[in-house]
Length: 83
Image 1 (cartoon, rainbow, N blue to C red):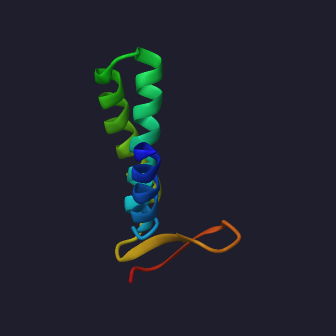
Image 2: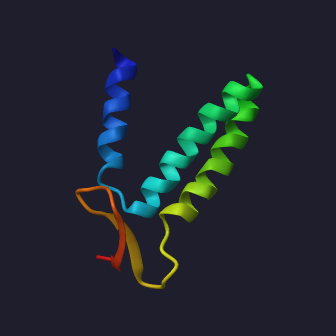
């Protein structure tokens, strides 16, 4: 039960982040899960988290200075000035 409450709290805080931060967090989490599953070690999970975080950050980042990547209600990505 405690793990479920912690997971819900973390998901709630992630919803308020910028797209770049969300990409980093999702990439790091996914990388840690995959790295840990493949190597069956904490070291593999750590390496996977770092690699996934870097890739997630690059995906969530806009290529233009001063612009951020957003998603509309249909899931389409678009760039607009950062708030």
